Amino acid sequence: MKLQDIQARLVEQDSALPPVEDWHPDYCGELDLEIHHDGSWHYQGSPIGRQSLVTLFARVLVREGEKYYLVTPVEKVGIQVADAPFLVTGWQQQDDYLLFSTNINEQYLVSDEHPVQLLTDKVSGDLLPYLLVRRNLYARLHQNVFYQLAELGMPGEINNTRHLLLSSGNYQFSLGLL
Image 1 (tube, rainbow, N blue to C red):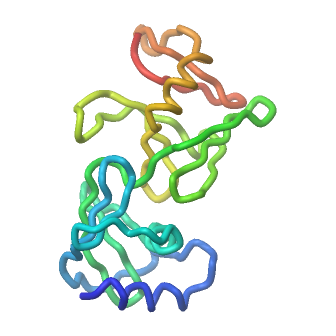
Image 2 (image 1 turned 90 degrees about the vertical axis):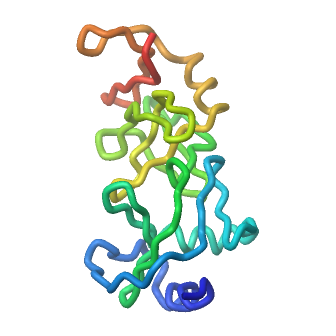
């Protein structure tokens, strides 16, 4: 299995997010592709320098249980992900809402549809905030974003436990335990 073969098949697709949940191709083995903890993508140990290629592959990334795959209508290959496949690298306030930007140039309005959840970082073991972006794929908040948002947070309680809370519209979420 070659990365170029997958790339060629994906380029044929239109620019909308492909319906990967409807594709059920045969498993074709592992691809020597890894998403590092810092959000960088590496093929055969070397970083993928073309952001457009990373964005293309991110469109067909799926997670089944704890395993990650790139899928096309005709093949499915396993890849390695150190923690979460994406990072929230920026944010801005739009009226009463928070808009998060990821390392693959996607934006998500923090809401019930794209909630922030406290999950265990697979590398550090710490409980950290992650944004659900799509199809059970998460983006971990980059440390700089976390610290910027922490300055805006207010102490509050969830289930009798003290948290640092933020709101985006009517949606309230925790940045972590106090």
